[in-house]
Length: 242
Image (tube, rainbow, N blue to C red; front, side, top):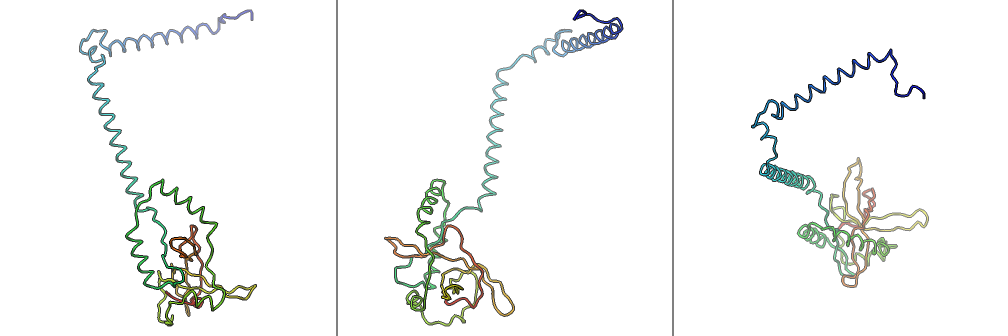
């Protein structure tokens, strides 16, 4: 480039005007800065105010830390207030000796003990409980009663009370009959009524079913599975009421 660094005559006047305006603005800004700092004209009080004060900085640091801690405390309390109603409770287990049927008294005792024993679970306890559930999930099996003899064995301690005397309500435990279309055999499952939906001639029920587990200390007992096993049934499918 031959003319590198050269300015055309046609553009020189405009560039000169622009440069003069910038210099004037810079001069005005510099004078305003000196005046604000108390240098010109000299103002000792203004100059001293611009000098950092160690004590003031220390107080500002303490106040800043105090505000930070206050905000953290407020957020923590607000979070606890919102989430304290969503505490996770332990699953309810029915401790019934092997060979003994489930009675209404067992259900009421289990409910009262569950209410008393309900407590907060820490993170370590939750992890341990999840590992136990994973280990026991392979051993979970659904309670099935294939025929009337097995049903009588399972309910050997139950009286011959007429189930029609019981009103269908939430919280009662029942034995539900399902008919298999392939084998044409009846299967029976134990569950708890969680919702009653009245219809014209009969009630429609939502039942949460239990599973049977084995333990060396407790023998066979019933408990709720890790994943809810719920089903909608008709009232005439109920064989027994506890």
